[in-house]
Length: 318
Image 1 (cartoon, one colour):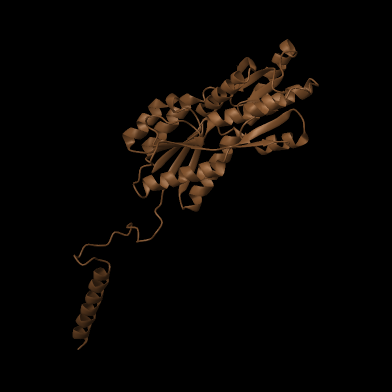
Image 2 (tube, helix red, strand yellow):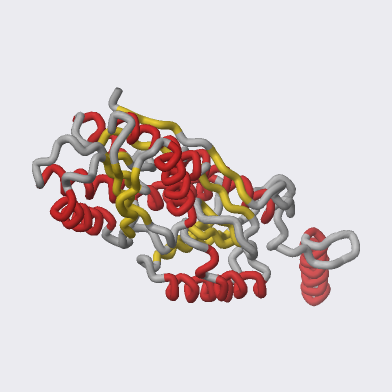
């Protein structure tokens, strides 16, 4: 009786094992793939944000907003900064493409300077989106402000503060498409109003506050009697200009910027030389880029256009 009981136990064990295997298989007998996403489950998305301008307050703000938005969606979002080095930015794009994330985001910068990086992404089949950059081949979509309008609004505020006449110094940074576009908008506004542009001074990045401060100190030392206003392409060089004017004891030269950073708002509130800024809608820009990435990566939907421009709002001390 004992041998027969032993074989019976073995038979029961085999049947039970086969039943368990059957439960883990589909109707055709194939074993279920444990990596298959269940219906309704959130899809994991990996995004690499690459930027040359993380030291810039506005760039950091919008990238932080995008990263937070992505993480709320369950995404893995990483950020790489090349500190103004476009050669390193190309290399960062090539490195990212080799890792094949679901998407790459250019966090501000000029796409025409990263053609090698964009080609690497295209060859790897990785879609590239841009925040506050420019529309270009290799960019699925760019989301930015209406920079020409930002330039126009800020220039109009400066003209008003100057009493409608005089001459200005412009603090610019042409490598950034957005700053370049707003400088063009501001210049046209000055010319249309009969305002003389004495000089357009390039501002180095990183270190825009310090660089602008030194430039304005030099300009005011040479031609203070000619300058009646200073236009900053973004808030940081405008702050540098304010610091230079205050150090020289000059109180009658108004300054404007663009971005609407907290430090700019604080300066405007003080009632000093910083008289206006145009605030960009960074939360809306960050959310729009995240929506476009999700539509492309999760739903395979292309955007209706490759360039989205959102409005900004003028802020003054009045």
